[in-house]
Length: 278
Image (cartoon, rainbow, N blue to C red; front, side, top):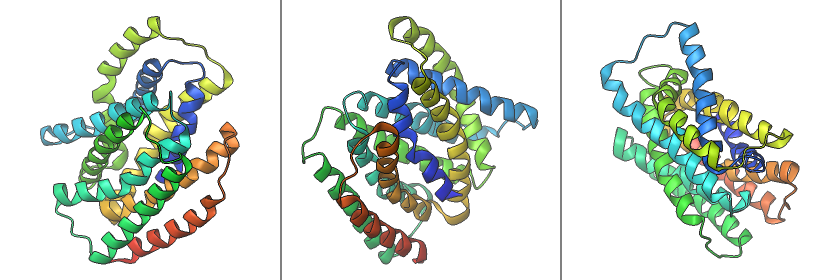
Protein backbone atom coordinates (compact mmCIF):
# COMPACT_ATOMS: atom_id res chain seq x y z
CA UNK A 1 0.00 0.00 0.00
CA UNK A 2 2.79 2.43 0.89
CA UNK A 3 4.59 1.61 -2.37
CA UNK A 4 1.40 2.31 -4.34
CA UNK A 5 1.23 5.67 -2.59
CA UNK A 6 4.80 6.47 -3.64
CA UNK A 7 4.00 5.61 -7.26
CA UNK A 8 0.95 7.89 -7.13
CA UNK A 9 2.97 10.72 -5.56
CA UNK A 10 5.75 10.39 -8.16
CA UNK A 11 3.34 11.77 -10.77
CA UNK A 12 2.45 14.83 -8.69
CA UNK A 13 5.15 17.17 -10.03
CA UNK A 14 4.64 16.26 -13.72
CA UNK A 15 0.87 16.61 -13.37
CA UNK A 16 1.34 19.98 -11.65
CA UNK A 17 3.62 21.12 -14.48
CA UNK A 18 0.89 20.15 -16.93
CA UNK A 19 -1.72 22.02 -14.88
CA UNK A 20 0.37 25.19 -14.81
CA UNK A 21 0.36 25.28 -18.61
CA UNK A 22 -3.16 26.69 -18.50
CA UNK A 23 -4.06 27.44 -14.88
CA UNK A 24 -2.50 29.95 -12.47
CA UNK A 25 -0.74 28.52 -9.39
CA UNK A 26 -3.18 29.74 -6.74
CA UNK A 27 -6.17 28.72 -8.84
CA UNK A 28 -4.63 25.31 -9.49
CA UNK A 29 -4.01 24.56 -5.81
CA UNK A 30 -7.42 25.73 -4.60
CA UNK A 31 -9.34 23.97 -7.38
CA UNK A 32 -7.32 20.83 -6.68
CA UNK A 33 -8.43 21.01 -3.04
CA UNK A 34 -12.07 21.65 -3.94
CA UNK A 35 -12.23 18.77 -6.43
CA UNK A 36 -10.57 16.24 -4.12
CA UNK A 37 -12.77 17.35 -1.20
CA UNK A 38 -15.91 16.82 -3.27
CA UNK A 39 -14.78 13.29 -4.16
CA UNK A 40 -13.86 12.51 -0.55
CA UNK A 41 -17.08 14.04 0.75
CA UNK A 42 -19.13 11.95 -1.66
CA UNK A 43 -17.43 8.78 -0.40
CA UNK A 44 -17.95 9.74 3.26
CA UNK A 45 -21.61 10.57 2.62
CA UNK A 46 -22.32 7.45 0.57
CA UNK A 47 -20.88 5.19 3.26
CA UNK A 48 -22.51 7.20 6.07
CA UNK A 49 -19.25 7.59 7.97
CA UNK A 50 -19.66 9.08 11.44
CA UNK A 51 -18.02 12.41 12.26
CA UNK A 52 -14.60 11.89 13.93
CA UNK A 53 -14.24 12.21 17.69
CA UNK A 54 -13.34 15.64 19.00
CA UNK A 55 -9.82 14.48 19.95
CA UNK A 56 -9.06 13.73 16.30
CA UNK A 57 -9.75 17.17 14.85
CA UNK A 58 -6.45 18.77 15.91
CA UNK A 59 -4.55 16.01 14.14
CA UNK A 60 -6.76 16.30 11.07
CA UNK A 61 -6.01 20.03 10.99
CA UNK A 62 -2.28 19.23 10.89
CA UNK A 63 -2.87 16.77 8.04
CA UNK A 64 -4.89 19.37 6.15
CA UNK A 65 -2.30 22.10 6.67
CA UNK A 66 0.49 19.78 5.57
CA UNK A 67 -0.75 17.69 2.65
CA UNK A 68 -3.91 19.48 1.48
CA UNK A 69 -2.80 23.13 1.56
CA UNK A 70 0.87 23.62 2.48
CA UNK A 71 2.77 21.11 0.35
CA UNK A 72 0.65 21.54 -2.83
CA UNK A 73 0.81 25.35 -2.61
CA UNK A 74 4.53 25.66 -1.91
CA UNK A 75 5.57 23.09 -4.52
CA UNK A 76 3.25 24.61 -7.13
CA UNK A 77 4.79 28.04 -6.54
CA UNK A 78 8.25 26.49 -6.78
CA UNK A 79 7.46 24.72 -10.06
CA UNK A 80 6.82 28.06 -11.75
CA UNK A 81 10.59 28.58 -11.87
CA UNK A 82 11.99 25.13 -11.05
CA UNK A 83 12.18 21.98 -13.13
CA UNK A 84 10.60 18.79 -11.81
CA UNK A 85 14.09 17.24 -11.47
CA UNK A 86 15.25 20.03 -9.18
CA UNK A 87 12.01 20.04 -7.19
CA UNK A 88 12.54 16.35 -6.51
CA UNK A 89 15.15 17.36 -3.90
CA UNK A 90 12.19 17.96 -1.59
CA UNK A 91 11.12 14.35 -1.91
CA UNK A 92 14.72 13.26 -1.51
CA UNK A 93 14.82 14.77 1.96
CA UNK A 94 11.22 13.99 2.89
CA UNK A 95 11.76 10.35 3.99
CA UNK A 96 14.46 11.29 6.50
CA UNK A 97 12.49 14.30 7.76
CA UNK A 98 9.35 12.20 8.19
CA UNK A 99 11.30 9.59 10.16
CA UNK A 100 12.63 12.31 12.48
CA UNK A 101 9.11 13.74 12.96
CA UNK A 102 7.77 10.28 13.77
CA UNK A 103 10.40 9.80 16.48
CA UNK A 104 9.49 13.13 18.05
CA UNK A 105 5.71 12.71 17.72
CA UNK A 106 5.05 8.99 18.20
CA UNK A 107 8.08 7.79 20.13
CA UNK A 108 9.19 5.38 17.40
CA UNK A 109 12.71 4.05 17.91
CA UNK A 110 14.26 2.76 14.67
CA UNK A 111 17.56 0.89 14.88
CA UNK A 112 20.98 2.31 14.11
CA UNK A 113 21.01 0.26 10.93
CA UNK A 114 17.79 1.98 9.86
CA UNK A 115 19.23 5.45 10.47
CA UNK A 116 22.46 4.61 8.64
CA UNK A 117 20.56 3.35 5.59
CA UNK A 118 18.12 6.30 5.70
CA UNK A 119 20.99 8.81 5.81
CA UNK A 120 22.81 7.01 3.01
CA UNK A 121 19.68 6.97 0.84
CA UNK A 122 19.00 10.66 1.48
CA UNK A 123 22.62 11.50 0.67
CA UNK A 124 22.45 9.58 -2.61
CA UNK A 125 19.27 11.34 -3.71
CA UNK A 126 20.51 14.79 -2.64
CA UNK A 127 23.86 14.30 -4.40
CA UNK A 128 22.04 13.25 -7.56
CA UNK A 129 19.58 16.15 -7.61
CA UNK A 130 22.19 18.79 -6.69
CA UNK A 131 24.54 17.46 -9.37
CA UNK A 132 21.74 17.68 -11.93
CA UNK A 133 20.98 21.28 -10.97
CA UNK A 134 24.64 22.29 -11.22
CA UNK A 135 24.96 22.83 -7.47
CA UNK A 136 23.12 26.16 -7.63
CA UNK A 137 20.26 27.10 -5.31
CA UNK A 138 17.26 28.79 -6.90
CA UNK A 139 14.67 31.18 -5.55
CA UNK A 140 12.27 28.23 -5.51
CA UNK A 141 14.32 26.44 -2.84
CA UNK A 142 12.71 28.38 0.03
CA UNK A 143 9.33 27.12 -1.13
CA UNK A 144 10.68 23.60 -1.47
CA UNK A 145 12.27 23.40 1.98
CA UNK A 146 9.15 24.88 3.57
CA UNK A 147 7.07 22.25 1.77
CA UNK A 148 9.41 19.57 3.08
CA UNK A 149 8.84 20.46 6.73
CA UNK A 150 5.09 20.95 6.60
CA UNK A 151 4.52 17.78 4.54
CA UNK A 152 6.58 15.67 6.97
CA UNK A 153 4.35 16.90 9.81
CA UNK A 154 1.22 16.04 7.81
CA UNK A 155 2.51 12.58 6.95
CA UNK A 156 3.46 11.82 10.55
CA UNK A 157 0.15 12.98 12.00
CA UNK A 158 -1.82 11.17 9.31
CA UNK A 159 0.09 7.95 9.90
CA UNK A 160 -0.63 8.22 13.62
CA UNK A 161 -4.35 8.84 13.05
CA UNK A 162 -4.54 5.94 10.58
CA UNK A 163 -4.00 3.60 13.54
CA UNK A 164 -7.28 4.83 15.03
CA UNK A 165 -9.42 5.24 11.89
CA UNK A 166 -9.20 4.00 8.27
CA UNK A 167 -6.59 5.85 6.22
CA UNK A 168 -9.10 7.01 3.61
CA UNK A 169 -11.15 8.66 6.36
CA UNK A 170 -8.07 10.51 7.62
CA UNK A 171 -7.45 12.24 4.31
CA UNK A 172 -11.19 12.47 3.60
CA UNK A 173 -11.97 14.47 6.74
CA UNK A 174 -8.81 16.57 6.33
CA UNK A 175 -10.01 17.53 2.85
CA UNK A 176 -13.48 18.39 4.15
CA UNK A 177 -11.89 20.52 6.87
CA UNK A 178 -9.97 22.50 4.24
CA UNK A 179 -12.87 22.81 1.78
CA UNK A 180 -14.11 26.27 2.95
CA UNK A 181 -10.57 27.68 2.68
CA UNK A 182 -10.11 26.20 -0.80
CA UNK A 183 -13.48 27.53 -2.02
CA UNK A 184 -12.66 31.01 -0.72
CA UNK A 185 -9.18 30.86 -2.25
CA UNK A 186 -10.55 29.79 -5.63
CA UNK A 187 -13.12 32.61 -5.59
CA UNK A 188 -10.31 35.13 -5.02
CA UNK A 189 -7.73 33.62 -7.39
CA UNK A 190 -9.77 32.72 -10.45
CA UNK A 191 -10.67 36.32 -11.52
CA UNK A 192 -7.00 37.36 -11.31
CA UNK A 193 -5.18 34.41 -12.88
CA UNK A 194 -5.20 32.65 -16.21
CA UNK A 195 -7.61 29.74 -16.50
CA UNK A 196 -7.47 27.81 -19.74
CA UNK A 197 -8.58 24.18 -19.86
CA UNK A 198 -6.42 22.31 -22.33
CA UNK A 199 -5.84 18.57 -22.50
CA UNK A 200 -2.71 18.90 -20.35
CA UNK A 201 -4.05 21.36 -17.81
CA UNK A 202 -7.28 19.39 -17.34
CA UNK A 203 -5.46 16.07 -16.97
CA UNK A 204 -2.98 17.64 -14.57
CA UNK A 205 -5.72 19.11 -12.38
CA UNK A 206 -7.82 15.93 -12.30
CA UNK A 207 -4.89 13.63 -11.53
CA UNK A 208 -3.38 15.86 -8.85
CA UNK A 209 -6.77 16.15 -7.14
CA UNK A 210 -8.00 12.56 -7.34
CA UNK A 211 -4.94 10.42 -8.02
CA UNK A 212 -2.38 12.18 -5.86
CA UNK A 213 -4.25 14.10 -3.18
CA UNK A 214 -6.97 11.55 -2.44
CA UNK A 215 -6.33 8.00 -3.70
CA UNK A 216 -2.57 8.21 -3.24
CA UNK A 217 -2.92 9.36 0.37
CA UNK A 218 -5.56 6.69 1.05
CA UNK A 219 -3.14 3.84 0.36
CA UNK A 220 -0.18 5.77 1.80
CA UNK A 221 -1.74 6.24 5.23
CA UNK A 222 -2.97 2.65 5.25
CA UNK A 223 0.56 1.46 4.53
CA UNK A 224 1.98 3.73 7.22
CA UNK A 225 -0.42 2.33 9.79
CA UNK A 226 0.53 -1.24 8.85
CA UNK A 227 4.35 -1.09 8.80
CA UNK A 228 5.04 2.04 10.81
CA UNK A 229 5.80 5.62 9.81
CA UNK A 230 9.63 5.36 9.71
CA UNK A 231 9.73 2.30 7.44
CA UNK A 232 6.98 3.55 5.15
CA UNK A 233 8.66 6.93 4.81
CA UNK A 234 11.88 5.38 3.45
CA UNK A 235 10.02 3.93 0.46
CA UNK A 236 9.82 7.52 -0.75
CA UNK A 237 13.55 7.47 -1.44
CA UNK A 238 12.52 6.01 -4.81
CA UNK A 239 10.09 8.83 -5.55
CA UNK A 240 12.51 11.42 -7.04
CA UNK A 241 13.83 8.85 -9.49
CA UNK A 242 10.32 7.78 -10.46
CA UNK A 243 9.42 11.45 -10.92
CA UNK A 244 12.42 11.88 -13.19
CA UNK A 245 11.29 8.93 -15.33
CA UNK A 246 7.80 10.39 -15.63
CA UNK A 247 9.25 13.80 -16.50
CA UNK A 248 11.13 12.21 -19.41
CA UNK A 249 8.01 10.57 -20.86
CA UNK A 250 5.47 13.28 -20.05
CA UNK A 251 7.48 16.51 -20.14
CA UNK A 252 10.32 15.64 -22.51
CA UNK A 253 13.06 16.26 -19.95
CA UNK A 254 16.43 14.52 -20.33
CA UNK A 255 17.26 11.34 -18.37
CA UNK A 256 20.75 11.70 -16.85
CA UNK A 257 23.27 8.86 -17.08
CA UNK A 258 23.64 8.90 -13.27
CA UNK A 259 19.96 8.01 -12.76
CA UNK A 260 20.31 4.19 -12.99
CA UNK A 261 23.29 4.18 -10.61
CA UNK A 262 21.45 6.33 -8.11
CA UNK A 263 18.39 4.13 -8.45
CA UNK A 264 20.43 1.03 -7.61
CA UNK A 265 21.94 2.70 -4.53
CA UNK A 266 18.51 3.86 -3.36
CA UNK A 267 16.98 0.41 -3.77
CA UNK A 268 19.72 -1.08 -1.59
CA UNK A 269 19.05 1.54 1.11
CA UNK A 270 15.30 0.90 0.94
CA UNK A 271 15.86 -2.84 1.34
CA UNK A 272 18.01 -2.27 4.44
CA UNK A 273 15.46 0.05 6.08
CA UNK A 274 12.64 -2.44 5.47
CA UNK A 275 14.59 -5.33 7.01
CA UNK A 276 15.89 -3.42 10.02
CA UNK A 277 14.28 -3.86 13.39
CA UNK A 278 12.98 -1.06 15.60
